[in-house]
Structures are given as structure tokens and as C-alpha cells.
Image (cartoon, rainbow, N blue to C red; front, side, top):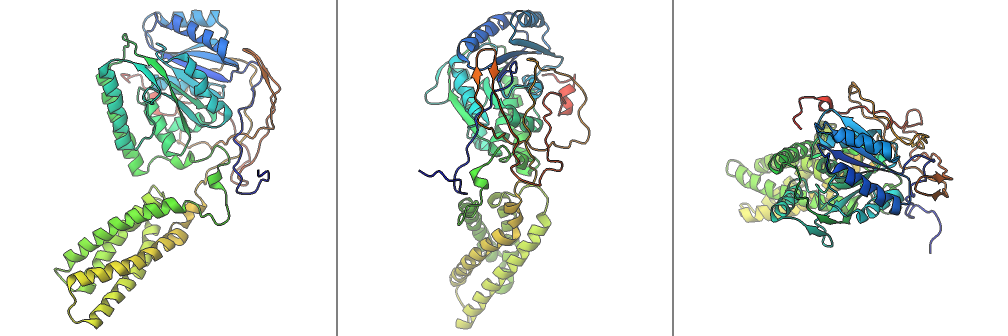
Length: 509
């Protein structure tokens, strides 16, 4: 067994360190709207389960979404009677708004939420958060569509759920199986960077968060759940489905246009083996080869079609030059996006200019092949011309890939994660409850520096339902020189709305 720390050794993903006494490890949020009948039995059942089975300190936060019945009074009574229960009220509706507000202000390192009807069996809660505590995963979701899940619900809801997930797979290439199950968890350090990118404040909030996390390469853990449908659910299926489809269109359009800064999320949370410079293993070579071959095959067909069309109106050299020029521009744009993962307008003109230089080399190869063919025979057949051009294009394609990789898009591989920062240990808090101030959005829209996972000096902790002792943390700089001041400040204790419509009183949701 290898025991050295050579560049080929996989890095250890550290277990979450025990927090200071009084600081919960898990904060379970229950978003509610006019749930005066179900709120008290739900909270009592959840609290009893956590007190019996969860080995860390915890908190239950009731997030009231502008209820108009006696839900706020019930929440306050529960907060007074049970020390681990806190309540917070929002004046605007929206499940996503409630989750973002409470999660952004929580001091717990693991954040979760579940629906008030407790349709999901609570025995799945510990398996849900365990991969986040251990550092194995970044997000975790309960899945009603996994093979080993046990689900009891009507045919209509089953059909809608599966149809919605098929839409997500077909339109957004989502690989997670269940977007809307009200049973999810996320690490706080991940939420700090991910939540400002999520625009939706309603039921599509979950889906948008998962799609962005998956596209950024974050690890999502799925837990099969036992789930029993609540026949008294107040969710408006038609309106929710319509809003979800609008959200799918908006997110798909943003992803296609490259307007989302997903590079800010790509592997910022610790030492990833894909970031290692391992001898004789080029980064991303296999994936780039596959993408380049697909783009090359399509662009070759496009080139041949153009050549055949232009050949009707001119000589072989003119038709070849025009067809190669048009297909080269399309080929560079496709490889830029699909093969080398460069999104957005930055550097597009320079990449196209360099691509035209590569085009010139390909033009010389193909034109030379045609000259040699015409020298060998005075009137070659059209099929012979195409065969010669295919052979010349194969040689040009190999050269094009090498030039794209080492020259045109080399900056993408070397500077792939330009916005990283030095991690600072989370401050310990003596109070068990966070505060939820409100305010106007920050001007300028500048994104905060990226956090990274903490490195832990092997903490030894003894935890009960209410205390945790013996935690030790240290700060480690993963990428020296990339942070301006060498620090990163934890901003989760101060709530700043990140979208203008978070304080829009006219939002019907």
C-alpha cells in the first residue's frame, strides 16, 4: 500500500470539524404558508427524531412565508417551548425566498430543509446529511424516483413528476433523478457561493440550484427515500408546472448564452485530483478528443456540402477556399464552446483570428492536394476530388487539434480557475441562534471571493445532543498569491438580498 504523498496520491476529503459548544451542526428549515394545523405536530415529531438519532447539535428553523392565519403564533409558541426551535417570518411569499434568506444567515455548517407535511420518512435524514458532514459531497437530495425508493402517491402526481424530470434531462441535461422532492441539504460554504446565482424565489428554486451545481461539477449525493403523498397538499399543480417550465427556459437560455459565471463554482472547495499536475497525464485530453472528433465529423460534412454547392459556380480552388473559410469559423466557435469549455464573449475575436491562422494551414494542405490531383489527371471525377479532400482534411484535423490545444485555447487550461481565495476557519459563535437582518441589495453586483474547504488538524470531539467540545481548525492556502489580502471573510451572519425581486412586494408568489 502506498503511503507517500506523491502528486498521484488522491487528496483526503476532511470530515467536518466539530463546532463550538452551542453552535448547531445541522439547521433544518421548514418553510410554511398557512400551516397552523400541521406545524406543531411536524416540529414536535422532527425534534423527537433528531433528539433520539442525530449525534450532533441541531436547530429547527420555521420560515413563515407571510402566512395570514395563526401560523406565526404557533411558531412563536414552539420557539418558546423548545430550545432547539427558532422561527423567522418573511413578508413575501415564496419557498425559494424563504430558504435563501434563512440559509444565508445560518451559522450551521450543514443546511437542510423539508416540507411541513413530513411526507418523507425521517430515517433518511441522517443518510442525507452524512456525506456532507464527512466532506464527501457538496449537496444531497432525497429521490422518490430511485429504484429502491418506496413511494405511495396518485397516478397524476407520479406522471407529472416523471414527465418533469424527463424535461430536465432532455432540455438541461440534468443527471439527478428527482428535482422537486422536499428533502435536501447543502454545505454552508457551498451555499455561500451558489445561492447568489439562483434567481428563482418559488418552487423552481430547487431545480435551478441543482442544475447550476451539477453544471459546475459539484458533487450531488442522492438518497432513496420512503415517501407517502399528502392528499391535503395545497400546491397548485398547474401554476407550479407553468412557472417551472418558464424557469427551465430561462436557465437553459442562460446556460446556452454563457452568461452564468459557473467557473466561480468549478472545484473551489478543496484539493481536487483533477487539478493535480501528474506526469504524462495531460489534463482533459480524453474528453477534449471526444468533443473534437464529434465537432470535426460534423464540420467535415458541413464543409463537403458547402464545397459541392460552391463547385457549381466556380473552380475547385475557389470552392475549396470558400467552403473551408465558412466551416473553419463554425468549427472554431463549436470547439471553443464544446471541446474546450470556453463560454462568454471574452477572447472570442482573438480565438477566431488564431483559428483563421489554423485555417490557412488547412487551406494549404487541401489546396496542395487539389493541385497534385489536377497535375496527375486533367479532369478528375467529383468523387475523386472529395476523396482527396477528405484525406487532406484528416491530416489538417490532427494538426488543428494540436494547435487548438497548445496555442489557441491554451490559456483555458492553464488559467481555468482564476478566482480562488484563501480559506479562513469559520468563526465560532457562542449564541445558538442566528440573526436575520434585512436590507437593500448591494450595489455593483460584484461577486465575493470563493471559499475553499477547510483543512482540519484531526479534531477529536465528543458530542451529545447539546454540546460539542475539543474542535481544532487551521487555515491552509491552497493556491498561493491568488487572493489579494490573503484572507476570506465569512459573510453568512449578515443577510444581504442578492436579487432585486427578493424584496419585491408585488411578487404574486
